[in-house]
Image 1 (tube, one colour):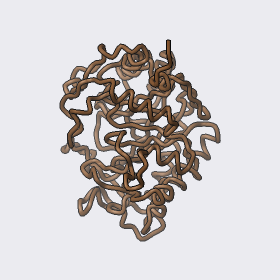
Image 2 (tube, rainbow, N blue to C red):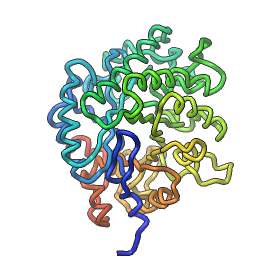
Image 3 (cartoon, one colour):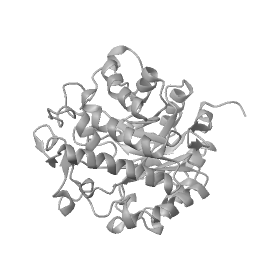
Length: 374
């Protein structure tokens, strides 16, 4: 069979403890299917089906570490205490399906869950400066003792990830949650060493969390870090307005021990800095500037003609066009991994179907799937 650019998606990939059969990753997606924070057998089955469907790496839905104020909803998994051991079965199910897995450790900062605004867990949140957005209150301002405790909780969660048999760990530093609230000048107004005028200054908290993690997991356990420019409700926000600022943002994280950047965009094909004349997205720019492995994500496998400001939150048909397009960028070595969210949520066998070019069998995505998801 003649070479097809889609074949580039099915090359193996290795980075430290992470050894993948292909370049396709299941992106983390919150589901609210863990009663009282417990990862049930259904959770293990859900991830196991997608592993058997051919994906190389699964990044779990966001899971809360053992700091109580990291949580804003009761039915999102808690990665601590008595809720830890069931994750061992999840990892085993995924490995049995031939995939690797990393939990995504998630502290929401001052962000209430807008799907569940009445949750009492939103009453005691914390954030860098008591803000969730420009002049939008969210969480109590953290003391330096709070910051130290939060850093320790991230490191413990990473060590638990390794001890439970996961292949890597990811920290959620995107979309306006705690790490991102420190990065963003609109939500970080601190005048101590965790604030500052530049994004490099405001990276200190995240870098210290990564450094503390590296100390407990050692040099060979892969650490991923998700970041984004956009925030939930603030889609035009930017932490870095130029390639120079972008490098100053991510370089301290690399020095602290991040191995792979999971670069979230709403639409992967949009250039991050179009004024430069280069057709590179966020993942492409970080790899170009630092040489560090990167992952791209953003509306892959969905119909581009349906894209709106609401990001096809209602219904989107499946299409091979964005699949081929992202493969062309991967072939040019602009990034290393390709993460797919809603398309794999809709279709557990999405990866195998793409590999076999069974595009007519791909299922579309709709929000109603969340009610009947298998």
